[in-house]
Structures are given as C-alpha cells and as structure tokens.
Length: 270
Image (cartoon, rainbow, N blue to C red; front, side, top):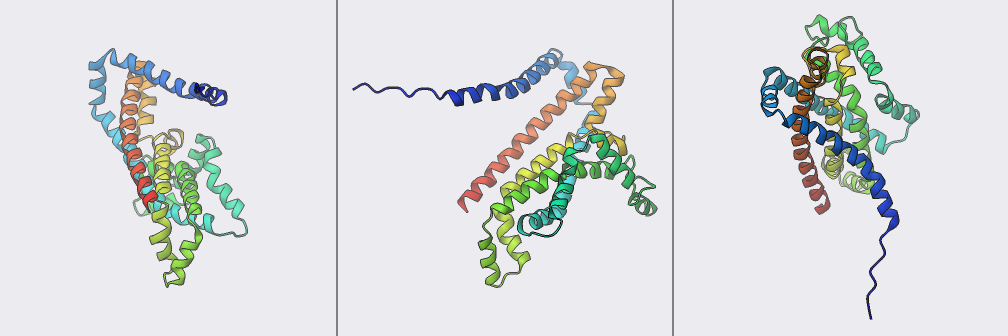
C-alpha cells in the first residue's frame, strides 16, 4: 500500500509568506546598508575607532543599563502589586504605566525636561545640592527610564502572574514573610520574564532620541551623534556611525538572548 504524502498546510504557508514581508524588509535594509559600508572598509574602521563614536556607544549602552538596574529595583515591586492585588483605581495605575508607550517621544521629552530641568519640581532641589540633569548623564538615564519602564513592568507582571499563587501561600503558611516568599519563590520562577523585560527595556532605552535630546544634548548618545553627523556631514558619515551601532547592538543582543535562554532552561528544570 502506497503511503500518501501529507498535503502542505496552506494556512501556514500563507502566514509564512505574509510574515516574511516584515523579516524581508529588515533583512533588505540591513543588507543594503552592509553592502554600502563594506565597499569602503577603511572608512568604516576609521569611524569605528573614533573616540567620539566609542564614547557615544559606551554612554548609550551604559545609561540604558543603569536605567534597567533602577527599573529592577523600583519596577519589580510595582509589577508584583499589579499582578497579585486588586484595588480601587488599578485601571488608572495600569494606564499610567502604559502611557509612555503611547506618547510621542517629543512629548515624553518635554514631560521629563519640565520635571528635571534646573528650575523643575525635582531638578531644582537636586540642582541646589549639585546634582544636575540638564546636559548631563543623569538626564539621559532619567529619559531612558521613563520611556522604557512599561516594557519592563509589563513583562515582569506577566511572569509573576504565571507563578501559581499557592506556592507563595504555602511558603507563608510555613513561616516565611511575604517578602521572603517573593524573594525566594516568585522572583526565581519569574527570572525568564525579568530577563526578557530587561532586554526589551534596555533595547527601548538605547534606541531613544527625542526624549533624550530634550534634556541632554550632551554628552551625546549614539542617536544624537548620528543626527549631528547627518546634519553636518551628510548621509555617508551618519550611515557609517549607524552601521557601527548596528554591529554593536547585534553582538550585545545575541549575548543577552543566550543568557535568557539559559535562564529559561533553568526555569523548566525547576
């Protein structure tokens, strides 16, 4: 008896073709830039080794990482509250958390600037003790923190919601406080979502431009430097800086995804 081959799933094929448009557009843009830049490798090397470019990349990634560290400390408790409790006005809080996602970047920048400028509600008293946000590294971090917070909080909240609450309750009946139950049970079991949320927030932070430039043109993050090079040196200068940043981000995200997968395998074993 001859075995008949299964018919191809037309639905899956259609979905794959439609979805490939997004992937194809990204690949096409990357290939187009790569071919253009590799046609002049000495120029790429010269730009990549410029102190200003290196400093901008380090400033961008360092500020983004610091913003994520701050989010871990102040965003994780909020994510837990939203995941585990119901209270009056919860919908309002959830909307406020998501607000930076919907706001135009320039509006986000104005909000941050008004609050943290030297005459601002928070900026003024801190300026009096020598802590400045305008045209300073802390201003970059605050802008990045504001625009990236929803990505971290929502990811961690989803992870906490997936942890069975009875595990936490059992720990508390055995004498653990809520804090220790969260620290030793909930957070370890949510490690994959914490890592993924951190990656998303970091990526969002390092990609910000408008909110940062409102409060801190200097020190230049990489997006500000690319804009400056485009307006002063044209497409060739700016595209090379962008190409260098793409390579740096590609390497960084590969490493972060490998760490995230390792954490995921650990969660599955647990």
